[in-house]
Length: 178
Image (cartoon, rainbow, N blue to C red; front, side):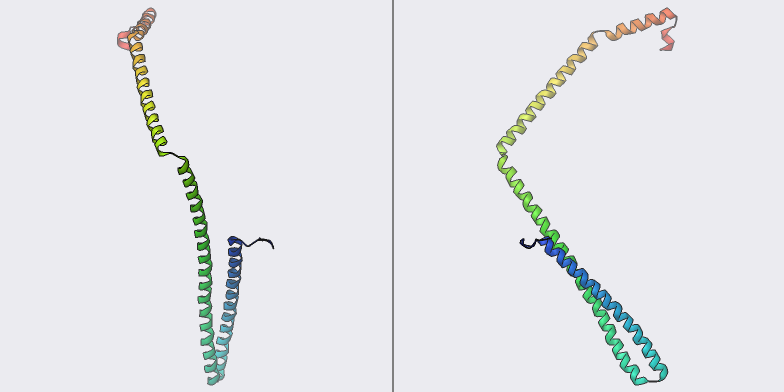
């Protein structure tokens, strides 16, 4: 809520307007309900006059009933306009907030662009790419060297000989089993 010494914010104004529109909508609904009640009473009165044979009174009441129904239909139109105004207010508020967010984002982007030198950024990216390529080449060379060392050592043949010797000692033939 805005205090006595502060200017009302847009949100405060929108809240007040929404509250007023909701009140108007409730009043229109109450008026329509009263008109519907009056319409039913008038229909009963017309039936009563028709049973009594009072044709002139029926005509007058019928004209009043027509006017009453027109008024009831007008309440629907007014209610629709009030709803439309409420929706339009909400849309305008959303658009205003979005514009504010876009303005803030634009200022942030502008600040970042001022601090960011395109030439330096390009040079940094090129240096990164070059160092990354070197690292990949070094890794490949290390892997190739390790592969050569392990394949030349004969560890696999030596381990197979040990397995064969152990199996021979316990009496199992390798040829058919492994």
